[in-house]
Amino acid sequence: MKNNTSPRAAVCVVLFFLVTLFIIYSSNSRNEVFHYTSLRVQPHLPTSLKKWGVKTGYLPVSGNKTLDRHCHQCVIVTSSSHLLGSKLGAAIDQSECTIRMNDAPTTGYEADVGNKTTFRVVAHSSIFRVLKRPQEFVNKTLESTLIFWGPPVKMQKSLIKVIQRVSVAFPNMSAFVASPERMKQFDDLFRKETGKDRVTSRSWLSTGWFTMVIAVELCDRVHVYGMVPPNYCTRKPPPHKMPYHYYEPKGADECTTYIHNERSPKGNHHRFITEKRVFAKWASLYNITFSHPVWE
Ligand SMILES: *[C@@H]1O[C@H](CO)[C@@H](O)[C@H](O)[C@H]1NC(C)=O
Ligand SMILES: *[C@@H]1O[C@H](CO)[C@@H](O)[C@H](O)[C@H]1NC(C)=O
Ligand SMILES: *[C@@H]1O[C@H](CO)[C@@H](O)[C@H](O)[C@H]1NC(C)=O
Ligand SMILES: *[C@@H]1O[C@H](CO)[C@@H](O)[C@H](O)[C@H]1NC(C)=O
Ligand SMILES: *[C@@H]1O[C@H](CO)[C@@H](O)[C@H](O)[C@H]1NC(C)=O
Image 1 (cartoon, helix red, strand yellow):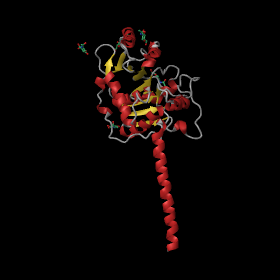
Image 2 (cartoon, protein in one colour):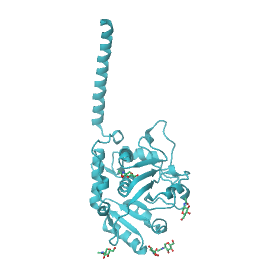
Image 3 (spheres, rainbow, N blue to C red):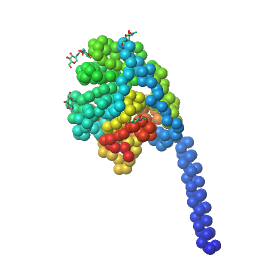
Image 4 (cartoon, rainbow, N blue to C red):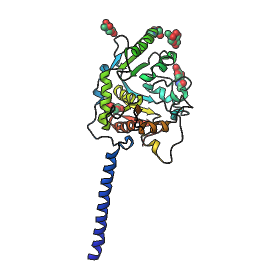
């Protein structure tokens, strides 16, 4: 008996030692440098995005309209080239509400991305690209609502005036701007979900982040087409190169863009991969599903 137990005890001691070393090592390396990609999404009570109140968070660009649309079922059509050749257009158009981003066009891509736009979420940096093609983005369908977001310092009166001028030319245009208070709520949400302050970590939230939150606010269920899962770009072997935008076939590679932004410490970058980790956690909380590719 004695001869049997002592090797086992020795193995236990060695194992204990190794596990302790591993714990010390991994806690040290986590404290050393902050890597967004190794970030664990913070456990906490569910944020009640549904209680934010859509009507007060988005201010009309002209008139006294309120954003009071509610959809049972929405799709987010991403701008990713994963949608090219998908022939999803008809399925996307069947959805009660479709949400698109920035200057992602439908003309010429209907078969893959559909031709209906209920909401379009537009970054301050894309305002000119959207408004200089009003027949594509403003006057194409009567029901489209544009929702602009931007840091309050960027959304100066001059930028709002540009949107207002277009709304004079297109009186049926329905346009809202995220209020400064709502912009702060978006930042607070990022801090709560990731434990990282957006400003001190020198990053911008992406249009994808705003679009996902707005979709959750407006819709009971959300299906996302063309968004890659958080671990997609770092998997081995690496995925094939794919354009970041379906409408810019010669543009940047999607994963190169994601990884460069995620890892860059210099500032003015989007933490696309971190944001997707948060989306993965929200999936069951807020009825969000993903396809093309499917999220495991
Ligand atoms: C707001 O709109 C309603 C109709 O939708 C109108 O009756 C009301 O006078 C408007 N108020 C202002 C301040 O423009
Ligand atoms: C686009 O819109 C028209 C009706 O306006 C519809 O007949 C067509 O099937 C739609 N979908 C696609 C994928 O083109
Ligand atoms: C908006 O589009 C319709 C066609 O769908 C066109 O008749 C109308 O002139 C357009 N409005 C403006 C202001 O360009
Ligand atoms: C605005 O929408 C109404 C119907 O809601 C329509 O009768 C009118 O022609 C539209 N005006 C323009 C300029 O498209
Ligand atoms: C999820 O969707 C169902 C209907 O499909 C709805 O009843 C439920 O409220 C939704 N849950 C949330 C958190 O929105």
